[in-house]
Amino acid sequence: MEPRWRLHPADPLLAQELARALGIHPLTAQLLLNRGVGTPEDAARFLQPTLERLGDPYQLFGMARGVARLRQAIARREPIFLFSDSDVDGLTAGVLLTEVLQELGATVRAQAANRITDGYGLPQALVRPIVRSKARLVVLVDCGTNQPAAIRALAAHGIDTIIVDHHVPLQPAGAHALINPHAGPGPGRELCSAGLALKVAQALFGADAPQRLLPYLDLASLGTVADCSPLIGESRIIVAEGLPRLLQTARPGLRKLCEATGLSEASVDAVARKLAPRLNASGRLGDTSAVWKLLGRQGDAAAQACLASAHAAHQQTKEWYRRVLAQAQAQVSRLHFRDRYVLVVSGEGWPQGVMGPVASQLAERYGRPAVAIAVNERVGVGSARSVPSVDLLQALTTCQDMLVRFGGHAQACGLTIDVQHVEAFRALLNQRVQEAVGPQGLRRTLLLDLELALGAVAADWVGELQRLRPFGQGNPRPAVLMRRMRLEPKSPRVGWICEGARRVLARGSYAGLRGDSRYDVVVSPSLDGDGTLTLSLRSVKDSTAL
Image (cartoon, rainbow, N blue to C red; front, side, top):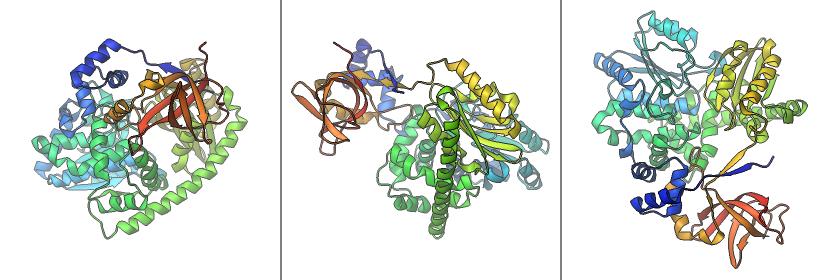
């Protein structure tokens, strides 16, 4: 189904005012307004996302109480047990906080989750070993928000828990401190756990933070990109400052990984495509020890062996992914997916570590939420991925009586279900999503920033658009609508967009397009290395204007 086009309403007067205040082009000012940046102060922060513009960390929910307890543990030399999730966000956040606490003199024992053997979050089986240890403070990273039973068990033995997490709270955790922007009022809802870990470091470092945070920006930016966090607010600052440092990282294993994958540009797309899958693969198999070492400051001698281990894990998960995806798509075909609002697929013997990528691919391919469930005897463990129009966590909440456990956020969730309930769950979840979004709710919408004539897309303005980088989730590349254009295909993927005597090179799909017709087109403008204006052809429709 072709996406709907929706043009942002223009506000020329406010755009002119913002442009004069900042000395920028009015069209750039309108793009800022489209992204919710409406004041000169916010715009300056957006256009200059420097570390000095990070806000007060103590404005984040739970930060003051959590940092006070960490300072107390450091001063008393209390051993700290840190436990993190096993995806890239959890691992980068875990390594970052471990190193920061050690830098400040803390004694930290760190461990990452094994989702294959223990499921998501702090396993109940680990509570007793923690109690037997000398630790009286546990820090849960990228997990723990919805684990009141484990936290109560620790508290019963006099052990405090600090949670650093970005997942939506569904029930009170009862922790000593919950550093989670979704748990109460305040800023930071765009931050993933790696971003929150950097904010904890900022609070712990105090006045020295701007300089002392520099060695940790590579990890924070990597976790932010891998978790597809919106590149607005402080996440934008972290990625803008951190990705360039990723290419010159002082972490031996991470540097070797960048070299091995051919990462040569500090772009969101390149990092998400080349680094994140390789780092996530080990967690999908269960053992993250090699990746933890790759991300750490030490271990140059072991880096090559860890790199080989991560590569082998990546190859294994790719093989599993291809096999399971083929089976899942066969199920989708039998389900008559066009009548479904949510795709729920399941299979015995499916490796649960690839349920996330399979669900993500199904959601992207079919334009609707997808749930992939790995069945093992009587229990199914699944991952769910959504589309922008559907709050999947809210939908799962309406089905919670059928679920053993679930959690996550609007666009990505995890769940555990008794196998006997899968069919009923599929029917109920489809009903709930249909009720929530209506008959047109699943149709993809392409948000358009501006409507311009081809002649208005000038190279000097397009050059100014570089100041809006990095582009990504929450800050997409500018989308420009141009009506009644003539297209001249040069090859299946390259052609010219023409209006009158003006012609601009455009890359995209020209299949089925004719040079004697008129089209409305959506493009994203950019400059080639030599400063030549080029367009990316993103969507095309037959012109309806007379």
